[in-house]
Image (cartoon, rainbow, N blue to C red; front, side, top):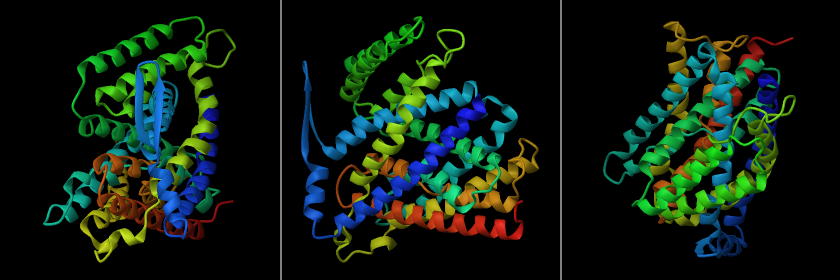
Length: 392
């Protein structure tokens, strides 16, 4: 059952990666076309949400980050919980290598980024940006480059990316929490307590769960804590067991229900509003050669494969874990390169690290260029592996 859910997840993520790529390409084209003013006007358009005593006005981009992406992180939280309790992360032998690889894949890109940004004109606060991996994009690239690759290789990439997401959530909690409103934070905690109590019911009415989650989200938004954490925390309160014998588990049901909307709706829309940048933004500057975008590019395309592959190799040599069955080291190197596709997660973290100013366009340029280069290197390496050892 766990294997079936994992395979269904892989198919959805791979398909959604192609839509994500299309949305990003369209955004960059529009941002540099005669319709650029209309595109940026839409992204920056103020939008007011009001219900009861709550009233907040933000741009379309900000609402996408603070609102829709909270739903994305809710699904990420459920995926993490499922994998820890029932999936790949529940097996310590299988867990060791992708987790160590994820740690290496976060640490080395950060160091590479800092190597370009600790000097004059650098932006050292952006070091978490290249530490992230976009699950959908990476899986889509793997599906295209190596359609006959062993399932274990895809599961390795999925497990690594989930562990990577968990690390990214921790970074968001530690680094991007503004001045705290303790009263609002207490309200969010109380709402999470209600969700935990509701998890003991014979059945949870989905609308009631959604209403309480909305309350948690509002309090979190007002507390100064990033709303992505509200999504992950709420996901951890969803019970995994079925309410009646023979029924689908509540967690799995919520995952199946939400995942298509997130994969085919929320993430592509985020890519559309977050990826567009005008090349005119760089004026007479250094463009991609400036420390910020160059550090991101090098962190993703160079730091990620070094960190992921190096940690995986050491894990195997020290006999702390086993590499994916049926896969060679060249294939693992190709997958390590695909981990440099930061895209949506890197754009999200970049928006938190540099919420305004000229750095925004530099972040977008570095993330997109680094992700594209990572795809090209990963695909070429996987094709070379397939050529050297064709599969039956």
